[in-house]
Length: 114
Length: 108
Image (cartoon, rainbow over all chains, first blue to last red; front, side):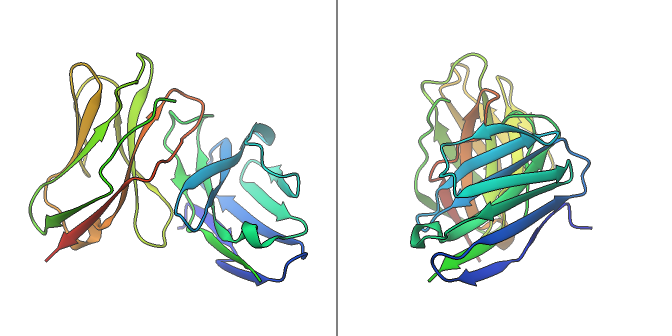
């Protein structure tokens, strides 16, 4: 059983398009996150949600909008895609908020904007 | 969060212990040391964490100096599957901040 799953694994699209990445966790965790890993391989947190409530928003452009329909899902919608959005996006979950609780990461979604 | 300094890369022979150093000289009293690793093209994976005492689990051991300004992650018997980027992160509850990590290559 996959603990944290993401779809799609690969996403290739044109500049200006709108796209969504989905994340689901079956661990029963209360907190979910989105991270971005750019071409230089630095992994940075974008958002975190706890019980469907936004907790962290790390000055991400408002073209990025996370949506949490329930505790097990955290989707990422991106409007008006730009070349600089090309990266690998990782979803993660943990039982509690913050860094002190072990985070479990999904396999990543590689987004390529042409 | 306190910043960490890790060597950019290191090699290790298969079957030998791998000792990964991390400096965190500005760590404060309530901050923990966490280690994650990222195998190529996969999501990061939790390894171990500690506050003051040395810790051991099925994956690794964590040795924290008495002044807490540095730590060492020990992989006791490295295998080829341990080839990955290893991240040392100092956490005080708010979030995980990943640095550049150490790229560990285990060679046969």
